[in-house]
Length: 419
Image (tube, rainbow, N blue to C red; front, side, top):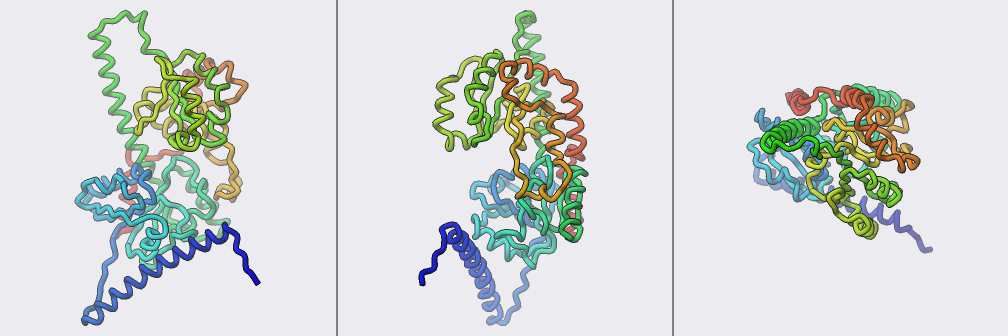
């Protein structure tokens, strides 16, 4: 009798075996060390690490850096464990923060699963659901979100096994409490602290804005230029599409770009980095058809802050960058309606409409093909809209509590768990 295992199942079993092997190796290595100490007549007493921050990718350093800075300021010792060998934390000089590269995938999870710590802070979901298991030697797991929207947009059961969750708006508290009741889970410790990484963006924006305005005033005085010929008021439109079949460039392509160029505005196209790999042929064809000029540019800057500041409006697919842009830079957006199947997400358990869907029409306009021939007027009306300005204020009020105090309130909560 021949047994057959399909490739998908085989791959899954192989991953599980590798994970079990890594955990076993780590366990037996600890066991050998304990026996070694005992044979020498000594008793090993390994103190728990007071505080651990776990990051599964360097892209989350913007979430953790302001928190680490506040921990350093208060002289609170912390070990920062990362799966990225080039995580910026590894090169930053702290006295009280020790950054460690712990490997990737199952190697990292094997270490985390055997961790001894009082408190673990992470933005990684699915604790105790997939490879990353709760350690019996960790007293408290704290989750901090990395986006300014619904906390139910994680894959199903993503936050069920955390002890505490740091949030940015009261509507998120309601969402978590609803899930707890439906799943008969014990109530977690929920604390609204704001959004530390947006606070840092806001600080940078304020400083940048002050400097830019001072520079412009100085230039105007020195040049004494003819105001009738002033072109500084020309609008700049940032097209920031994601990649994939539902991305603006793939979905609408030249039909939309032709109309956008006709507006006469400064157009900056900033494709998702993945597009230059996965959609290389399409991007190259578009770059040939729409070459760089004094009115059109292709942007690939690592730091997008400068172009976000200079643009007057963003046209984008549905993504978290929409909220970063509109909340921090206080500018309107034109967005492609999201195509979202929530069946795999925690949102599927909650009857109420997602906050994200409710707020989008208040902060910008949905992009429709029927608007393409009239896109210039659509852009103008969005930029001038008082309604969208009120909507942005409403969004900030609901999803960004304690503006400017996120890191302080986060560390306040962590300290309360360390006592």
